[in-house]
Length: 412
Image (cartoon, rainbow, N blue to C red; front, side, top):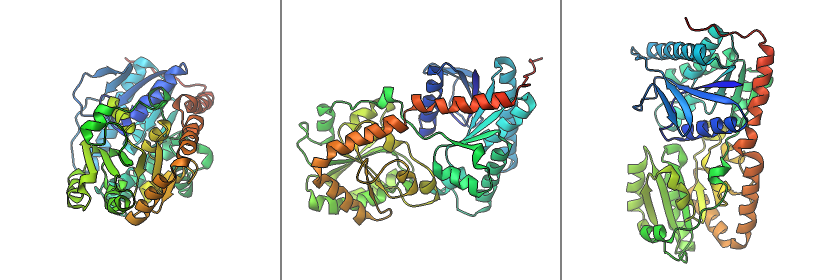
């Protein structure tokens, strides 16, 4: 069975989007499927028209599009649809599997109709809500409503829809989409990469001022992108109260993003500025070294439509590494963990609640081994890519059965 994945961007770019894509394609290959990817015009990384990265092959849409907002996006859809058709006529996939945003979904639907083959559209987040969370849009604006309408059109045109969590599925069902048309492929972890805790790197710890022998106070960590919705300002604001209860506590912030400068300024003005450290972005291959230096990974996401509807990936990676996780009590986190069993939840948008939860967790060191083990078992049983990828096969096979006369015309 051949599956053509339609993508916004891909490796060699590094993002949560590209890592999820890599995990999906690698897991499908392990199941015996043949896979390829094709990216739209927004993949701007320099490279050849057909590129192999980490053993995966991606075709680039090389067309150039221009025009005012609205018209430009419509031309993007057309250019990507044409590229999908051209590739499909040569490679002849059985299913087209598009991944959000809606521009990819609409291009895949258009190509699928021309080719006569089924289309799966997978929604990782509603991009209108992501724009609000990134401070690049406003809820209810014209752009917001138009993006939402494009999403509805892609969902309506696809033969089957996948989402990454129950929150997104419930929202689509509330819009009138039949629940039978919607499947869930939860965020997952490639346990060949994150399945075992890394050894503590004493040299790195000393370099960061965390104490080479691990005898210092608790290290609270965040590893990810610095967007406003992540609530890192609340985490920094929580540090004075945490340090008051645990004087040796340190905060290690690994990553970067739009909020980096303002967070650094906030940290510099904090009365416990010496307890807050920024590493900047680190290569993905070295992330495990930083996980191993932390006692608790904190994810203080602010409450919004985005954080209530979408499950993040980073807490799962931490849980797979047998790290303790403390997170704000928003819908996306509640789908991933059970308070007091596999993690700790605290009220969102509340630095005092964050500090109190972290301090209490540090006080309960005797509970750490059981919580770490329960968290890792939860990831292995519910978020292992190589196990969950089998859900796709069930969907693909049903669609192929429903399209017995699928024929892709050969290229002229």
